[in-house]
Image (tube, rainbow, N blue to C red):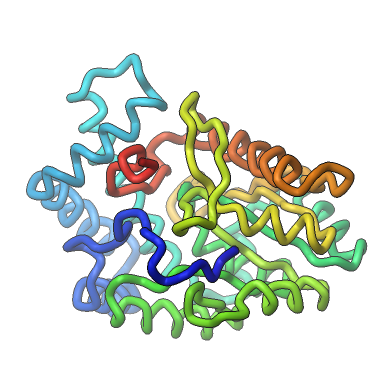
Length: 311
């Protein structure tokens, strides 16, 4: 599962680009703490416009990815969407960092839990087997940690891939620690899967991004009409433990304002052979992610050629 042999070929280093380094991320963290939101947004707008102009490979990669979402648009139109996508990512990052120091009242105003989401979370924990919160690289998944730890106050551990830049990785670990959230880094231990099973047995939520596979930790799904490799570990763990998969998304509705969308829990059918059950459950998650990307194309944060990596 997660801890596939180190020699397995990994997809491209997803976050290894000029914007994702310790200097820029560290400056962003410090600047957002002291600057008004409007000023931070202005800096983000200027910075992402420059990135869009200068980072032609990234611009082209985003436009290519969006081709399956808005196939009716021209390349130029999709490249313009790429600019708006970069700006949306900058604003999501700014809002997340600002929310770290928000008061309880401010956080309550930040999130709209929506209808039925709290009931879904509560029902999962009442069942006593924990739950696997699964999502894709769409929306503001980082700020979802604040929702869980400080607003609905549910036990959460995040399973994450280490950042390519060690300074960025350290800063992100520090941020999660400030939120009171445990982090498990994949490929840092031989027993990651056992640790996740123990967390689920303790009736906790475990959050994982599922739309990028790691080496042989993969299962084939149909995603935007194409065969795509998703991470298989979440569904395998659900099959082994009985914990449900809960697709969950945090989507922007305004400056510093987000709505929550939790899909009904997906129970992996343990009466089926494991491979079949894992594929069916992961396909259900892929369908949920596809629906949210179609609804919000400019919140699908893949900055490399997603489909090339599938090969």
